[in-house]
Image (cartoon, rainbow, N blue to C red):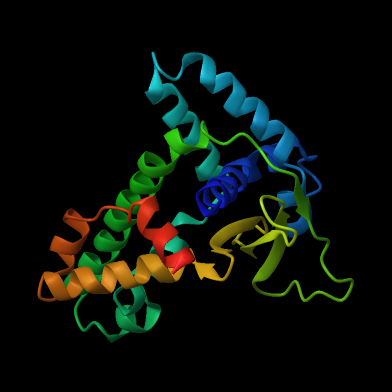
Length: 229
């Protein structure tokens, strides 16, 4: 069941952009509205892809990429995964403009590699998701919207208690709510990828360029094992 929950959570990440696009451009949706308005539209997208995926998988992958670009703050997500090597403090500690330029280049390269890895790992898996009852919980009336906001989602499956997914969103510089992390049944995906990045830094003796050049997203099976362990 964890596998299906991982797929459902990823499905909702992809669907966030659909609800955002449906809103009036003059009325930006809040974090709850961004998450809550997605399921029906995304199911239609997945159903359509089942008709053509075998002949043209890149078409679906490209659609996934477009949707993710609309809603996920990939650079912030990727910099979080990089830990200290993507932090503002580390950047400010660099003494030369050349070193700062290398930092910026690494962030850009890793962001693209991270995004490509997520798409390649999960896009096909979405087509296997058959759906469960999904409920998005409203935010508290006094919820603090000044920083990061967690929107909770319940997915009902093979047990009386629903599985819980928490989507962490934060406003970007344009005032739009963007997704920065996902926590599934207490399993923090951002932290898993950060641990993977740190392990790669040790493997490559601190050579960040080699870490980026050899980056692959942790297989879904690895996350399932951590979730069930």
